Image 1: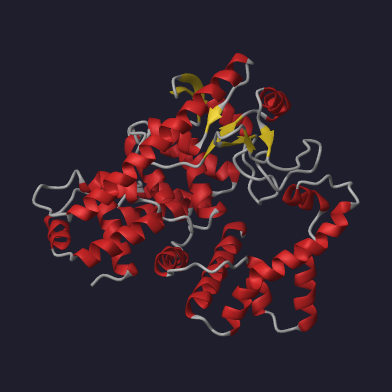
Image 2: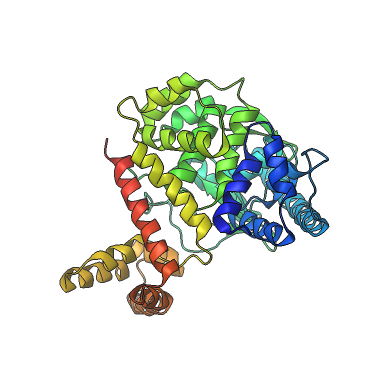
Length: 419
């Protein structure tokens, strides 16, 4: 009987970008109903039930898939299709609105990928609309959206020091989806330097939801998705994000300028992030990446231990049944022995800058109320993380596995930043 780890390995084999083999078909035909239940469970956890649905229906007719598994995947597809049709209806209205006010827009992530890369709007879910405008157009775009009925979900002031975010807080209109207006691809307080002027110069005209807008160039799209998956989310958002990158490379392989990817990576300072992501693509999904590209990204040693850490991180995510809510601060607190250091770390976690408190609690940073909310924050943190602290102290297996996962994240982040 399959466990989570074996199911994960088999799912990777199904999603692999190599031709389906007789060996894979034989493995699938030997699966029991209980095995298929486990595969569906892990697939959902990894965010790829729709991709699994698409891959399975393209397999040889000799592969026997239980009726219940087919029915459940088909139902998931139909739900996704209906939801995405509503999302794209709202996206069309927004894109048309901004275009009519002469605001250039780059469609990011899901809203672009689902139509232009997946080619079937039911095969990839997305939960909000990510759109990028030039920073100089942000005030105008916000005013246009506000006049149309969109409301900020929390406090935001363009004049604040907003280097820790890359988009305004989500905005929403009625029962429509949340919209995130980006001005950058990455926060400004990270150790990388994204050249946004170059991104805009390389942007390409596309049609999204029936509207003429812009998209990232193939090279910038790949780099953005790599950074989003490997650096920003530390590879803990499942195979869905890795598959996005793989599909872009497969669909655009004849148009990709690999030398440009290397040169932009070096310009931005993200060579290690891209090397690691490309290495994972080759190892896990058998995506072809030219060896010269990998060598040019990381010409020194091959960093096998780093790749092993990343693969372990992905497998840890697949293995943990119930991921415990652990933050880097909590891991740091857990690893320290000195009581004074523990107290200092706790206070730093509670007394965050007023600007960030304002966004967290929808207050003005100049309001006297904000001081009261620090007590509320302390209470909320205590209630939220007390069960986690208890599980760690009791040596709970999944809690310790999650702590180990966070420690690996920290090690990888240090490696990215050490140039």
